[in-house]
Amino acid sequence: MNTELDTRSIELSENIAAVRRRIDAALLKAGREGEEVQLLPVSKFHPAEDLQRLVDLGVPMVAENREQEARTKAEAVPGAQIHMIGQIQSKKANSVARWAAAVHSIDNERLISGLERGMSLALERGDRSTAVLPCFIQLSADGDTSRGGAVAADVDKLAAALQEAEHLELAGVMCVPPLGSDAAEVFAWAAGIRDGLGSGLKLSAGMSGDLEEAICAGSDVVRVGTAIFGNRPVR
Image 1 (tube, rainbow, N blue to C red):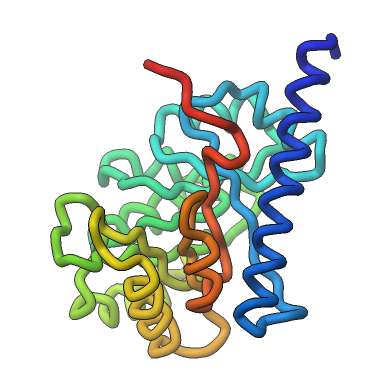
Image 2: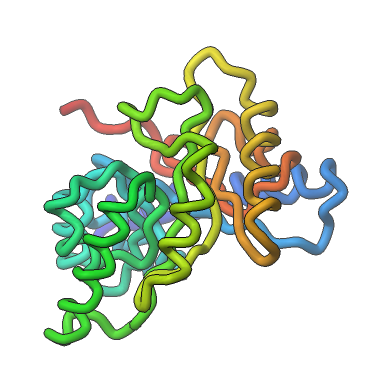
């Protein structure tokens, strides 16, 4: 590895350590000492080489927003465990089922059916080694489902569909506060929905700018991009 790559690896390692210190401080403030919050680096638009660096640093779990980019990176970095956090078109469900370590953007029953079918095909063809795909129901806090997410009234039926699927598992709920909203209020609302679905489920909430508020509300997974990778490359 050349000097430039070494420098980038050091930068990523330092950034990860800084974010983990923020997580620890937030857990302390929330009275959640001893609990664990999963750090999920969001590598959107950053090169596959950065994913390989994270794997080499012992951080294999990352998140991606776009199916094509995620698929390409999964092929380039076999050691990465990629979580899909962006919207998924039904026609892309088969592809996502082949490479995804988890999906955080379940918002309709058609997608659940597509992923279940895709999982069956992937297992039949030997494209996957794990038989169950953890899935989070994405919540729409403002009811505008065009940006992704399910309204609260649909959560129970989506949870039931996931629980009935052979190869999918209800892992919890995910939310992104709408622009201009009170993030702390949205996180608390999402945590309440998570709690209402049963025990042992996770809340995937909080990003670079609001992870402290999310953790104070009960988040178990924070999705952090800029604070780890830096600003996204211009495209």
